Length: 313
Image (cartoon, rainbow, N blue to C red; front, side):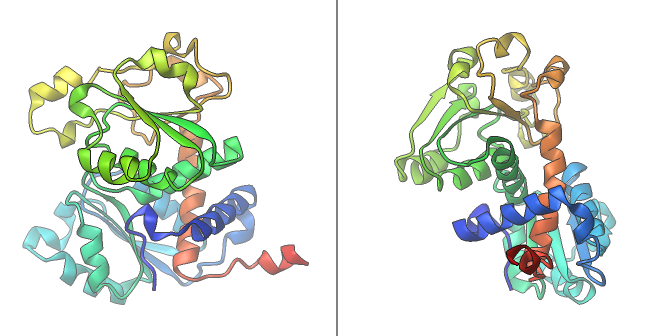
């Protein structure tokens, strides 16, 4: 039995297989609509979510399976004091696979230690959001054709942004990757990520607060919001929340084939005028998320691709 707690739980070969299957599902979803008949997904969201929760549920239903669970901690037995270990022990009798979002870092890992079914981390605090990262990789692969030889700009909340942390950890495994970190000094990437991932792997990177000067270098611009829920001080949030806003003027010197990604939800860090730019692919990115999660559910449940043999013939 395999779990997905961080993007690194998949080796490069497993990741390539997953992205290939997701691409096949994207191009012919109808073929996969019954592969999970009789299977159930437990959706345990201890923290609010719209896209991630609904995309997991849509993914399972698209595969012909069913969904059960809760969308907030208040509607679960955690409100009575039940531990994650006890919850997952019981859920293991009700479902075949489980996706969990939790505000505490490491909670899905703890759940995996007591679970009788595969656990998918749907986000734990400021730590990891592996399925968003896998969605990001699928988006880049489908639209760029490759995951190598890219300069990736990450902009906004790089300190608390779990999507950024997961993306960096995943992309350093590919060839000729460079990062440009765009943030105010207070929201720079954590020291452990800089030392243990970038410096340790000799990955080239630049840290800057000058948004426009680095725009011509980028193949990918990954925007993030400044997250109010991660701040302890409301004054700091208000001071930093509008630090970097992407608009058409800032895109004047960007490459014509640059892709603009965002994990969503957006607040005001991308002006709505950018939505009509062909480089803006963040809504397409959300669509890819459903197909990625369909492929992941199949892989973790060890359901073979019923059309693989057909393609080899």
